Length: 138
Image (tube, rainbow, N blue to C red; front, side):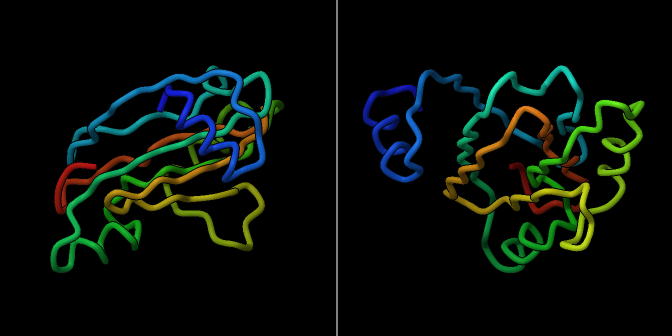
């Protein structure tokens, strides 16, 4: 993720110049792991998020991960700077639909899948809690 070759690939795919990067490896275990949407996680300028996911996809596992019912998906929500945080908390309770303005994007977990999301400074990102009925770790 931090090589010049990967930066060149991202530039070819997106048309954006990569100025720097941060790499992080995370495992999200069923019934245990998630991340929070919070104002401290917002970026100062537009950012390209590149996420590579690996999940079990044998049998019905692929359908479970794709449905979002077991969590583990990345969720992007618009920050309301005048809000007390209730809007971000509401995003944990349900998956946004196309009609809802506050829900910008959900990226479901799929094995060996690279997702690229360009987000502006008013967008928060979190990984939905992986519930205990998930077919494995994300």
